[in-house]
Image (tube, rainbow, N blue to C red):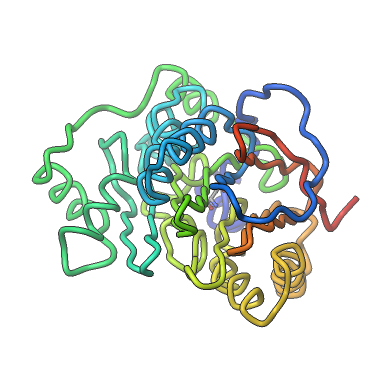
Length: 324
Ligand code: ASP
């Protein structure tokens, strides 16, 4: 079967590459309830430096909004991370296109999708929120806006990502889905010393995706949602499944109904699992925090970890999973 025919048939591509973020130490078990008497940063996967950056900013009195932006920017610049920002894997035609969003304590938000040639899509998303009457800009329009705002245009395709893509192009058969480690999108939520919550999510999306494909990460309610009175949630994994279920919004609404972040993540995962009998073939992971500082997480396959920075401790935790 020709590559494109196959991609069309499966609807998904590029999941066979291993793009695991750098592991620093083994993850710990889930933390128990923690009162929010200090600032807290949580983030998907094991992005130690990103959560430390945001956590230390919070310690120094920065707002949750500044902390999430600066925190995820670390991964946007990390050339070793092949699913976020510069160094991200390209689409199947060789173009790196980025998606990101940000959400402020007052519920305002900004988002960009299918943006190219800009290293920090999260900062462009923040400008969309702060400088335009809109919430989302995409493609060429997003790029023109970024340039107008003083962002510098640059090539985001590194030699390493180009080589991996060229290798991918040579393959005759593509194994869709399930390399559970290759979703490295960073979603981050910060609770600052005023008790205010902000969030950000940024990604280059699925490796070798169809040109123009946008996943859950820049979609408010799917890859990220928060309500400053309740809590917030972020998602990573197969965006198509997350979008279908508007999962981050659902998790916040489940917390509003009185569920703990952990229970809310589990209930939202039930929806994912019930909505697609092929759930064994893909990974989805959720991470949530409530206003009390309680944290919850859940994933389909074992392997998802998350960072938590609190009281100067920056720790990587193992998430419970549906499949054992
Ligand atoms: N959720 C992202 C997307 O579908 C992928 C990821 O989490 O790595 O674009």
